[in-house]
Length: 355
Figure (tube, rainbow, N blue to C red):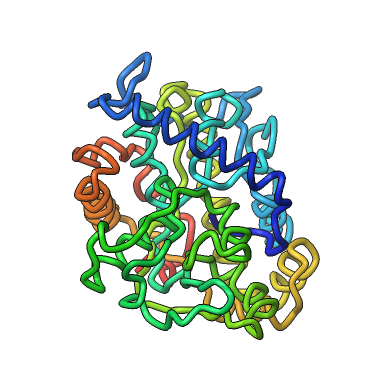
């Protein structure tokens, strides 16, 4: 997920979420035989409306009010539709559940949640893509660990979230290091459980976002915790929506209108790190200014390519990697992209952010 608080998780909440995660895994096994995403209608090919019809509303994800804050600070003006609710949700599994419950229409995630949704039989499409070139995650060890490289992961317990970016980063790192899945112990968790799992020693390693790792090391570095860095990247930062939303002409127009705001907001944050550090990381995420500066120093320059070809190749590689491990069934990921929206983000930013 894009941003996460760094404080520990209440142990009762952690244990409850473990039960929920186990139930989720069991539920997925019942969906694994679905060879195609379900939906009332096929993907729409109708041209996007040039104007958002009056009265149109969308329910949009915005973890920790990130989007609203970016739009406000960047002075992007008013959206041409009503946001009926800003939903404080970010983790892929939670987003899929919100999509299913029709409590969310549009979300910002990495590349793996759309693959997971397809595996579960839920029809959703990618509508905008920001390519990331630098790693967003590092591998954190539990306190007192002697692990210093990915090769040292052999035989260790690794926090693994199948439906989130952290999961695919871990799988790619293992593959690059020449480690097979049966040479490690993958512990199924969701990313909001990683910190507590590390602190308690439930796992030896967990992938942490660049927003989490500074505070973790500040607290546990003196106790023997360390970070293992790699050059493995999670290439895709994307917007996606349920097919049912995109098949609605008015909502599809609203999604198209939202994309430029999303792209411009990320460009603004990248170009104004001092303001963003103070207004977001310090004031809303409870980080120190030094920690915030460390995070933005690692920030990816936004890249909104006019073509989705590279993104599709990457998504196919990711799906194939998951299929190799038996986590999903092999499929053609081209069905996950709604090409009516291709190029909208690129057209909204300067040439510098298109290549």
